[in-house]
Amino acid sequence: MKTNKTTLLLTGIIAAFVFILLFAALSLLGENDRVGAVVKELFTHIRQHEYAESYEHLCRDLQAHTFNNKEDFYEFCFLLHLSLLKKYDLLGENEYRIAVHRDHLWIPLLEDNDVSVSVLYRRNEPRTLLSILAGKHEEDFVQDLVTVVRERGSWKIRSINYTGSSIAGTFDELKQQMQLDQYIQQLPGGFRVAPIDVDVLHMTPLEKQRLSFIVQKLIRSLGEDKGGADARPAS
Image (cartoon, rainbow, N blue to C red; front, side):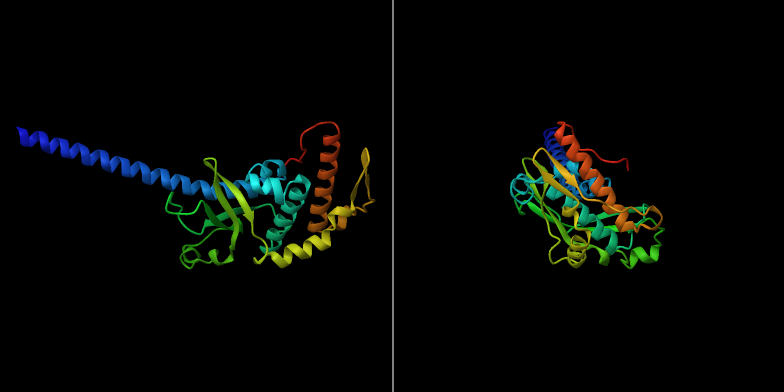
């Protein structure tokens, strides 16, 4: 009888231990999934011109120093998105999705509180078993484009590492080509808008994107004057 009680006790202890391990493993996997989800949310907001929502994903240090001016961040996001579209030959396309890939599994206490994440824009097209097994798409990721950090119990964007990446040249070229700062000039009590020629029939995808961003910036400026929220077009 005593032996049976001991066996039941040991069985209960082992079962409880296994349950705790399983719960910890599932929690760890969920936390690591959240790393990729935060980065995907960032780029989804950028894609939909929801720059204010994108800004909320930044860590406090990035908001306070690198992007303390929100308009600078919005412009950066716009150019980053265009750079990715151009890299993957998706300018003018709407049917594509965003893929992310962590560089390692984050383990609390054993790892630093930051994780690098690679990013890929992928056209919506059927993927064959052969292409999946061959890892056809993985080598196209922009490696370690985003670093996320654990901050106050949640994951935040610590840095966006486009310098030295496969889109660095494209980003700098687009920044020079777009000349976004020349269209709206801030004045005391308002702003001046430079004249823009719009040839709807012959506009390139890049020109359409630029015009859309300038119009959004103008609307945001009007909203700020009236104490309104950031405006954005329907996606």
